[in-house]
Length: 561
Image (cartoon, rainbow, N blue to C red):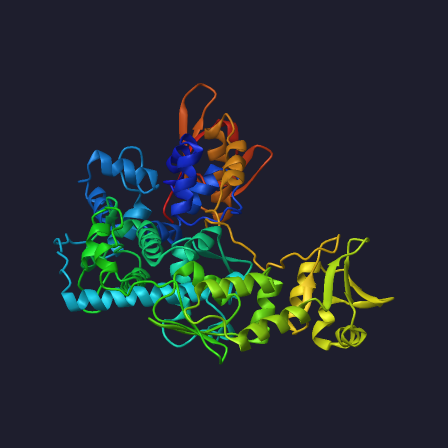
């Protein structure tokens, strides 16, 4: 048993629950750790693996402070910070296991300040174009995930099938990471789901979209590269967490994400709009917007059932138009194609024939082409053929005036998971009406979701994730258990643990025993057993077996073998 565990156990018991939780979080302790008391906690935190996790979380300044503490040169503020991490004791001394881990790492030298290189006009233009492309690609990802959450693999990355849904260009996983860092989407049950914040973001202008991303990215940066309300110059990022082996790769990834967001130029310079953020100021997109095309609110509707926007379409209009079309391109001009399926999907999502036609007339520079008007009318006429709604038993009923269509649904193998069975002139299922409606729509049946009164309702297929990611691990249960086992006689409890550990190890120890006359005597024992309040062991000096009452033992010190 470590001689450093007892003092650490006492300090853990003395701190508040909040500080204790912070310490456990910094060591990546599992909330379900099987610790019985603070002695268990102290021993676990002094394990080499736990210490290394604590060292990896240190910033450059904190690592230098701990190195100074090992040499006895840390100041009071630094020692307080390190004590909160469980890396020094109350006297400012570094426990031997921690000191050994520190000295095993290379020293952390001082780092000279680095100045950012201001971007040239050409570099700023390229950064602005990259930011514009990233914002558009991220909108594509979020719009796709809003309709149908994207499947993730065990590592948290998008599955290969999901990646193929996106056009070549930016890696969808990099866009997914930006969405996660900025709170626009999070992983829930192996799915990427948008948050309520994403809904607001999608309806915002480019300037608002970019500002939200840049500010969210800044707030999500690790402690080692934050400075005030901003961040350190990017040239100082590489060694920000000097004892974390995974940090160099993470720093590279963050630099790349900064470039994607237009906060860095491809030649590693800093645009003017990024300098404000780095210095802690609020986002200002004036210089950025000056380099980008103006958003438009009109487009050309064509006889071939396509729509062409002569520039970036205003996001709110773009979002609605995408709900009734297939989006084909997304550079500085966008192309949209109307199909029977895309219009049917808009109808399922709550649009009506009249709402679609009115919207298109409002934004068209060329009027409403007759082929497009016919397409919408035909889709609307067909849309009501299959009606899906709740039945009296709490299940779902599917009905249609077209018996042939109902028979086709009944035998469709792709719909078997819905459990549709014949019940007179309708089909019934125990699956929710909204799920059945979307399954039918995906199978290209003209399904309409209705309520109990037969009125049409929108079948919105949106599962929203919490705005914040999963909460950090909560240690309330673990801490409560540790405190519940904190008895009034901590010294006796600690002595019992020392003796039990010595017996398990058959250790040689120096035992101080209280004698009946009030004096003390030291015995060198090789522990062999403990039970019934008595310690058994062989007295090395007298070469005899002794049995000592545990209550008479004042202290124990394990000797080197």
